[in-house]
Image 1 (cartoon, one colour):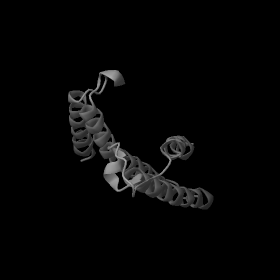
Image 2 (cartoon, one colour):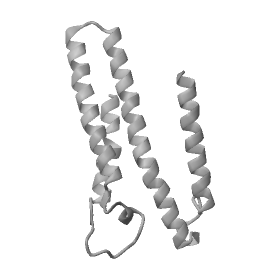
Image 3 (cartoon, one colour):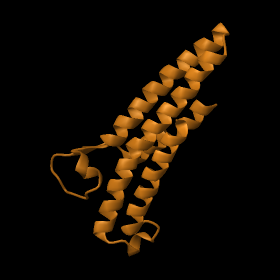
Image 4 (cartoon, helix red, strand yellow):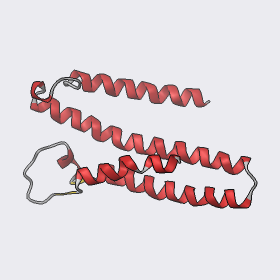
Length: 137
């Protein structure tokens, strides 16, 4: 059963990679057209929330499996604390990825809209990229 899910995710990932390659992914930024940059950024936005959801569910499944295997009270409490941390972090990462900018199309457009707001991208990505190793420890 799990092999089917993995195969499905792999197909989605390969299809997304093929789409972005059509728009210039893998080329130097100077060689990519403006339309290509916009398309690549759209696909990047799409893969953000898929990645965060997949990582969150993977970590939760491992932690729940630990609860089934280990009966020690202190270990189980640690697992429950880690489950709460993983859920809170991944919900934050998912929503900060999807709603990085409001309205959402500002994420991939370089529009000078008067009424838009974005989270600081570098700070958000720094936190979301450096927290998962802490969860794996």
